[in-house]
Amino acid sequence: MFAAYVSHFDQDQPLSGLRLGDRPVPEVAPNWARVRVRAASVNHHDLWSLRGVGLGESALPMILGCDAAGVDEEGNEVVLHSVIGDTGHGVGPDERRTLLTERYQGTFAEYVTVPRWNLLPKPRELSFEEAACLPTAWLTAYRMLFSRADVRPGDSVLVQGAGGGVATAAVILGAAAGLRMLVTSRDEGKRARALALGAEGAYEPGARLPRRVDAVLETVGSATWRHSVRSLRPGGTLVISGATSGQSLPEAELNRVFFLELRVVGCTMGSKEELASLLSFCQAKGVRPLIDSTLPLDRAGEALGRMERGDLFGKIVLTP
Image (cartoon, rainbow, N blue to C red; front, top):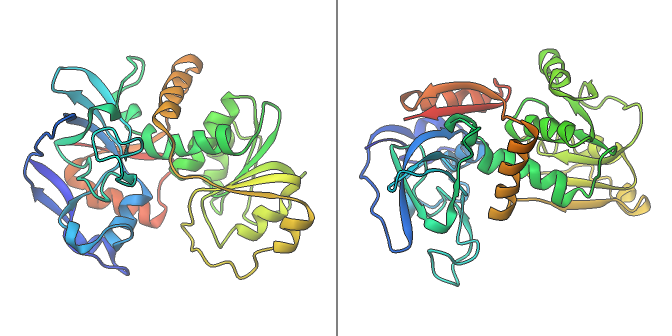
């Protein structure tokens, strides 16, 4: 089968390790299912995999891709929950949880296998391309907002770095839930598009906000951390799920954290139950993932290059 996979690691030029070509059709283990992939979306996790983060040499070659929607062997249209071993279903009870592509082959291929427990019915209202956007970036945004930030309708939330998959998902979901969403971006066009998606305000990075917010969603890291901490009201919550600009914090603002009794909360992906709730939310509110573009799988290098440059607004979807 045709697939996009990692052949070797390169920290400085990660795309040099990407290969497009034939890989074996995955075998089906007991309690697992094989899915014909109809659409798969691109995530920063794929770039980290090309750099060798969370992936060892012994696992190569590794097919990229965490997210997918497709059709199982019984003809059911399904969405994949990307976390393997979250509850022991389909793997040993002592196996630590991993994302697809960390231990098991990913979704940038014609077929993928996952534990049958990891399959959810795809709502008829969502296309395969839309459904494929949900299991990583959109699920992370959903968990950040509704499980970790402890916000309610009417509260204000700052999203750092408008344009990426998690950021655009958070704006759309938050606005649909009655939250007052604010965003930052260096790009004037991206700020304008965020406003069109339902953001109440859009600002340049580091700009003084009209008021302090109840929560900040942080995926950028060192470049925006100081602004995130300074933007919170006393007792507010900073939820972090990534650090695309780096993990070092030369100015951690610890005095503000303890003096204002701020909460700093980590967030990684979400549970199968949260994914089911997200699917239901999209059905009930008419919410749809924002898709930047849809490309054939043989243009995976172009898609990953655009993600590396930040040249996107929403999700890039690949179709085998």
